[in-house]
Image 1 (tube, one colour):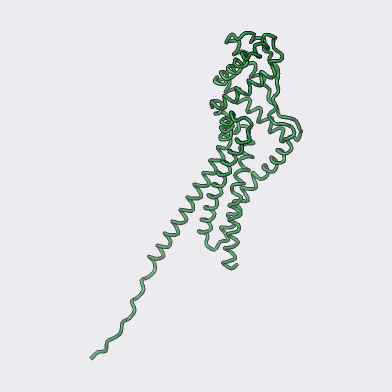
Image 2: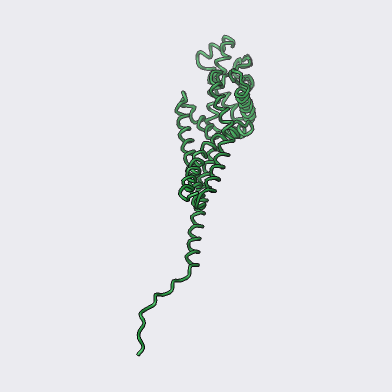
Length: 306
């Protein structure tokens, strides 16, 4: 095969491989990271101590409890709620509960249950909304209000209140995306590796091919970091309540921490390999230059003997 054709084929294969790197990393992260219940719970566990998350949980759970429970309360409680004296007690009780070890246990159990329910809904093909039961949290809040001697707190009914996490009409779209990512999570990284190896093998100068592959992988890692930053901004901008954006940002950062780490590894590894290749090339040139024999001096004009 002519050298020019080999270099063109190598460049095309390496460019395609580097293009697949960020997409392969993203698909693998969804398939083997985000879709794994154990890894998901481990990533979300530290957020139980995050003040922004605690505040968002207190607002959401407190509002849900009042919305579902208040109409069933004693008339005296309803009168107190109209004057705004009951709702602050409920919210403070929930916020106080978020600072306890019991909340951390409940947070981990809830995340495990929600993740399992969403994953099951994506895999079994049935169209049903994914919900969370507020009864365990309501029971804890009731106990805390009772301990604080809030009037009529013992009358709060602890009922199973289902809060929708994922509506049924969104499942079909998410299920199609999940099926595609589940296949791509394995084949995209494998394809990128095979294309890179083939491109390096057919190149006329393999050192340059390795350098191009390394720089392309580092560039792919940079694009992935940029995509994560843009995705974070768009995700927070779409939230209807600005007060919950710090909590949503903390959740986004926790879930994408592994992907950001992979991106920085691609950048660091790619630049390191490219630098090593460049240094070895310079070293090889110096060795060839030092090993070349010195040129003989040109013969001067001969003088005739007398």
